[in-house]
Amino acid sequence: MRFGRAWLTLAAALALHVTDEALTGFLAVYNPTVLALRGRFPWLLLPTFSFGVWLAGLVAGIALLFLLSPAAFRGTRWLAVIAVPFSVLMIGNGLAHVGSSLYLRRFMPGVYSSPILIAAAGLTLVCAVRLLRSDRKPA
Image (cartoon, rainbow, N blue to C red; front, side):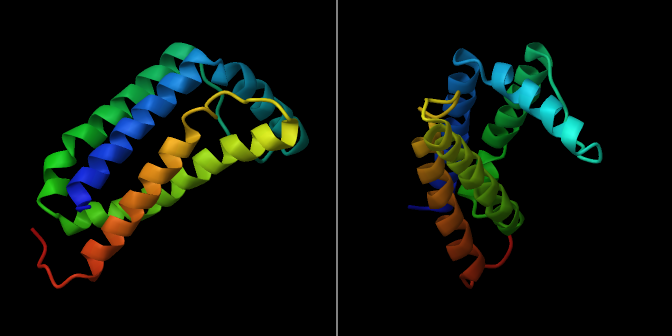
């Protein structure tokens, strides 16, 4: 698969994942967890969110991913450079949802779409690395 299609797949998978989180009450788990962590580790700078701010930020971020897709289809190397850490972050995100579900022995918010997110991010990572290793000149 080429980088452009992989990028679009990851953007769509993230949109699905955010929808999954929104419909299954992610913030009801996330915000109390952050507050408890801050109580134990005051130096930890994790934010809490209202639903509207959280959703608006993620929708804007996903819209940006889709807006960058023409650059991905052109094989723009700077976007591939960004895609590498972004893909790793999304793999970690998906694994955190799966891991917390296994640890707590219940389905956590966002776990249903996590395998799709992990697969799409893995595919994007492979395609981005291939593009960066290729002999293509920057677009």
